[in-house]
Length: 415
Image 1 (cartoon, rainbow, N blue to C red):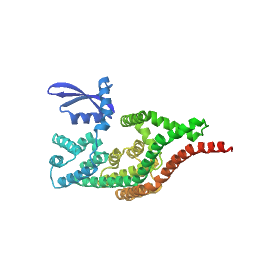
Image 2: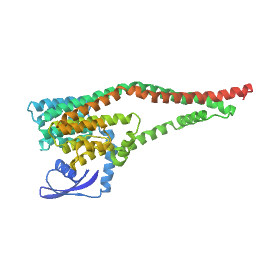
Image 3: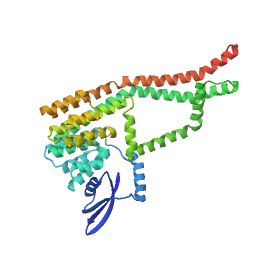
Image 4: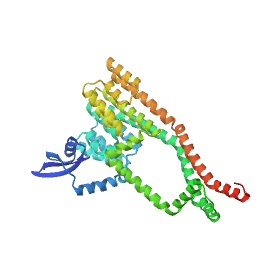
């Protein structure tokens, strides 16, 4: 984020206000949204040291203070908003009513602020931009679609259905991960108990006999020393390291980009991210095309909801290609993200004038691929789980029994 200074004329006085934005256009929109008065000038400047310190403090504790709205509450509120909008009730009254009736404190705060912004004359999508963390990119993209097409209630119904589908996939993911997670936790607890209480007894025996210890035993003894003498320090370092890592990912675009690249190269995770992203992208894009939005604009809105930066950059190149006069299927082909079958389907849709229905079929295909990955997640994780379990058991067995066998051989006179 860049630092801008907005010069605003309010009540006959000039006032300079600092704000953060991606570019000058966004800074101008934020200034209009947050402050009343006439904006005279927006200039990019060096961020003052005091502002840097305030931003550092705010960002450091943002992950603790920020909490997303519960999925159930958000889906229910979106459906309620769609029904009330369809019935002809104003957005302001709908948001106010939902804010008053909900029991979710985060939802109450967000919808209350949205109602205030709507009452001040701002659009719903622009107001929602201030709550991107709580509401998510998908919600903002679908509301933008509703505002552009004039069918906000239909867009909200579609949004609620998408959020329910995402939640269902998340529940399936949690269920698939439950067994391997519980097994790994149980094994980690057992390993910790053995290292902390069993290995020290063998350590005393080995020291008395002055035996030459094999490598697995030395590793176990080093781990025992680390656990029993520096366990709390190691735990504290891990917690602090995680907090710093999360802060850097959230606030440094280069580090976040690199981390996302690593995830795209990681076994199993890469497929989950890839097909989840392509499924959402094609789903929103098909809705936009069906509503009559121009392709370049539809691409821009669809891409805005993508979280993974490398995938976002590749798909952004499609928009640039289309703006320069290339066909959609040529732009998609250049990204190397789509199979040849998909490219052929898009090309056929462009030639026949049925691009919206063809993109919808592509979205169904990627949803099917994503569902297949989630359904087979437990089986895919089992080899990794077995490898880790086997390594831990092998380390304990060799570390404890190898020296005992050596000592047994020494006592019986065998070599």
